Length: 316
Ligand SMILES: C[S@@+](CC[C@H](N)C(=O)[O-])C[C@H]1O[C@@H](n2cnc3c(N)ncnc32)[C@H](O)[C@@H]1O
Image 1 (tube, rainbow, N blue to C red):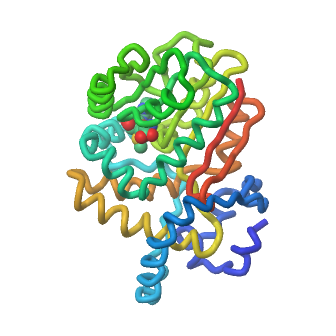
Image 2 (image 1 turned 90 degrees about the horizontal axis):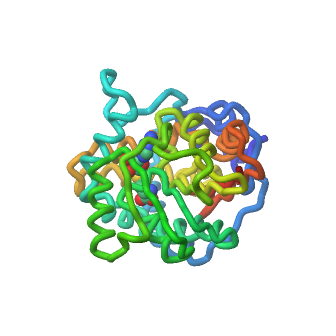
């Protein structure tokens, strides 16, 4: 069923790529926010509102071109460079190698710092579990792992990533902060994690699953390396459904993000790939169903900030 707010705006122009959400997602069951369980995050809303005001004004001026505000609807594999000779994994690794030096700055700049709040919320999902050994998959420059170290105080975190460039930055940060005994990184692929089975108390992935070449395989391998009773926490962008957040979000991702990316990053394609990969990602209950399929129990989806981002959790 379409969300009531969306129903009143049930026009192709207000949906991804001119398609209704149900068509894109194959009528997936509703997740928490879609059922009306939205959470108010006053602090975040305050941060968002000035930017929203600006974007809204801009939207009015550009009303004639509103159709182009929709993110593309895709179910096929989205790759950074549309290069048919290279796998998605190779292209993703290349892309993150190219942007590794500007990644941290652009990450916080483009999200107006809200990503830090989202990371904290995701890590807090593990607070009661008190994990001793954590694996951070797609650790990148290590920001999620550093946050987990400071909040959860585990004995050790190991980060794996397919991008050497991103790990180099993580290693520099580890050395600078003197955390070498607590946080170590390793080149590794989510679909073939370089660990024995049942090793970790918890596995985390922040903004990584969207980039996996084979999502199901990646989730299954995460399940394999978790101890029985261990918990996975995934943080990923999702697609808000309610007006006007959905339109603002599509506008921001379609115009602002690639624009800022072009200005500050050596690899402009990376910031066009971002909205494309978010549009194609099977978010909400579709992702939860995939977690169930690979064997996770007690799976949950918790949307944040109007569904711009979601936290997914599951137990082995
Ligand atoms: C958007 S960054 C997120 C980095 C970090 N987790 C954070 O929160 O800032 C995505 C990372 O996923 C990594 N990645 C993509 N596919 C992967 C895979 N199959 N296995 C491991 N890492 C992967 C990329 O190299 C990149 O560093």
